[in-house]
Length: 181
Image (cartoon, rainbow, N blue to C red):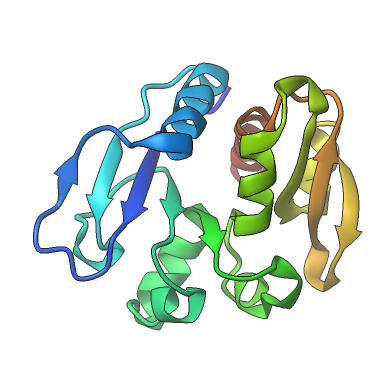
């Protein structure tokens, strides 16, 4: 189980007001399943990441625009602190070309095609296409479907009941691995 808090951020550029509340559609289902598997209350915040006050723990960020624009909102010191706690959802293109993710050392990511596949899949189909660290994936019983340089890969697991389940276990193992170093 994850002890660090998790917050879901529905990232909206140029938000003049930061609000908390529920999500419509598939994001709501994703958060609800993540709450169940992580056994946490996960607040949902709507707004631009640069305007959101400091939030502790992991940040699940649903991107509203391209990844390059998202990263441009932060200086290098802020990126160094935030990136290891961020899970990006909905990058605008396949993660195969996302050197930016490795360069910024995010905790994990789910590209738009993978998020769309999850929405259509039954939980019994397992979980696939969580982009994360190979070593952490192995700790939770996931296999590397597509390895990349830098120790990251697309993770796949037939023993997990969907992407939120795999993400919950992955974040718990990542937290534990970081605490032991």
